[in-house]
Amino acid sequence: NFYTDDELQLVVERGARVLGAPMKPDGAREIARRSRGTPRIAGRLLRRVRDFAAVDGAAAITAKVADRALQMLEVDSEGLDALDHRYLACIMDNYDGGPVGIETLSAALSEPRDALEEIVEPYLLQKGFIGRTPRGRVMTLKAYRHLGRSGPARQALPQAELFEDPDVLDGISDTRASGASGNDQPSKRA
Image (cartoon, rainbow, N blue to C red; front, top):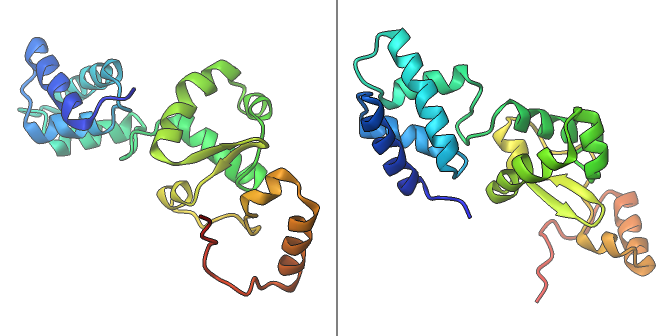
């Protein structure tokens, strides 16, 4: 279970008091927001931001100071770090948004499968940036938007394709071949 931003803000404020680091509430909030819902990460980011603020000569850690420090640490506004960005870019650039299996991702990123499944994916799933299907990991439109990219070149197929129902697939093939589905709205199933 992930902590809320409010809970993490309290963790960051307490940590700042223990470290003797002057902290403004908006600075604590900025660090909390990017801490992936995890107190341990909040503490690590706090220490890094404190060091940055000291070198920068900041009187206190404000949202602006925290933002600059976290940008230098490659932690974006949603708390995604360099490995998260590599993971998402791999699916987008190499596999047209997915689906792609975890073993393939592990090999492509030169990262252990366990690290991806236990560290990277839970947060990306919780944020709604990826989905897991029986055929592999897929990007969501939310991830494309967050990274400032357009969606995949191919038209996404409905979930029915996952079951490989020939009747459903024939209908999908027909509409994809004609370039029109006859209904631009997503289907609403009961």
